[in-house]
Length: 257
Image 1: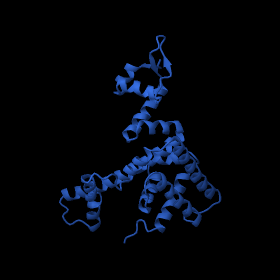
Image 2: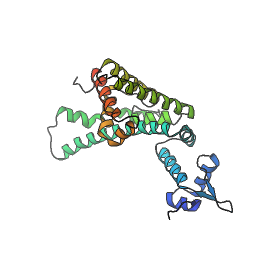
Image 3: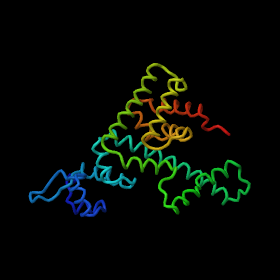
Image 4: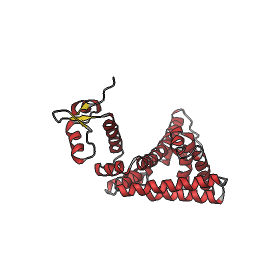
């Protein structure tokens, strides 16, 4: 029979989180064990361990304990919306880094005559201003992930509930367009895509047309994104993606300048 409860010492050994930290989480109400021994000692259940895993994941993303508590209290849908935004920002950063790596590997392979676009990719992620800001002890930069992390770490439970509600409204808008047979590149669908961009910009990071196009591609190329979006209805991810790509194209994204 699978183990159903763990003592605080066992959890500390299993997760490498100190007993002191676990006690602190309990005192804050962030992670209160659902069981006790007859002597009153803490016993953690599988649900408690799952919650601890989410706490550690959010800590890794830079959120404070108060912010994590508010997010978890707001419910799984709000947490899913936040994870979706963070995952999108991280994936965009990963793609950018991969493009830089490919350009560097081309240099290592002796391709001295790099194409203009290759050189642009090579230098795309190098931001000297970032280091100047650090030297001047200025906060923030233009990186989407950092911006998202800085914004979300301040959100209250009420903020996350608003994010959840606005996300559901966006989904409902797309679904209504699907039901009406509106083409993804129709004026109505592109207006929904613009509202989608405004949603990301308002709550997470300043989303350009290029960034939205990158996100739209990931919604259909990465099965994890597709499954998450299609929870509302199968096919929603593909429709959303096509609408956002059509809107981004109308804004000049992906076009040579």
